[in-house]
Length: 133
Length: 133
Image 1 (cartoon, one colour):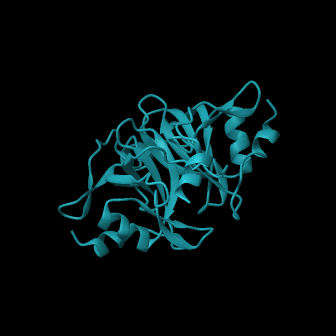
Image 2 (cartoon, each protein chain N blue to C red):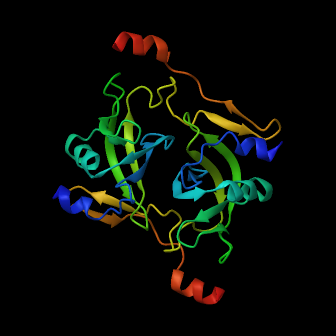
């Protein structure tokens, strides 16, 4: 497989990014939405671990680099417009830095109009980030 | 529920948009990624049918307005950074204008490096768009 020719099939936006929906390959839960540039896409293909481009830190990062909560790449899906990806992954522990398996841990409660937590926390981010220091 | 106060909880990007992952409420299949502005979010809440903002046509549109393939809103999930949504929907017929239920109908085949169609077409877009004219 020629990785450069795969990259050419993707349409990156004016900032050089393509959004990637990260989905649990086992139960199809959506874990997060991240942004990928050419370099992070190539690193993801090479290592089979998902890499993103951080828009705030302006650098490529390996998801899980601090805590070991890697996303092991299993499948790559492309949409009809070539400008969005679904990456199906095996998620080690949790995707969310707040301690949840998915970043989408809040749901709109229609009666109150509040977004309420409906997922279980699986680790305490304060403790674990302290350990990782 | 006060719809304006719900809108205030979302972080729209510099173009006034928030990405929305559309997911089938029945089997968790990811159907598409769309972009929503304040007006289309409010219309989605009011009508319980998903509305997007078209970046190319620069207008709010009701998903399914031509063919009746509406997305009936069932749940709204918000991510940890308040800048991405998952909308769980009941999808009438297909989400994709190419004739598939999901816009993510191609998967990377690692041996060839090609994105190959792996979903079944459920309608013929040419025929159906002609009927709708």
